[in-house]
Image (cartoon, rainbow, N blue to C red; front, side, top):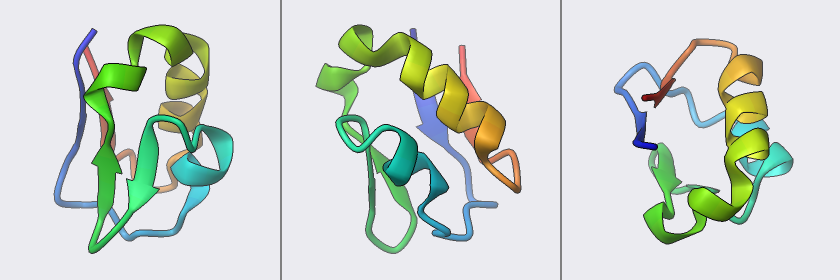
Length: 58
């Protein structure tokens, strides 16, 4: 699974609050690739909760 955060990210922190093992907020959300496999359900939940649909899960 590939997870990316596109440039529409507004750094609201919703993804980090749902899955802080994978997402952290700097200038925009950053993905910890090594943690994605162990947190797939939370990553999908964070992507659905993103208010600007900035999280791309493939």
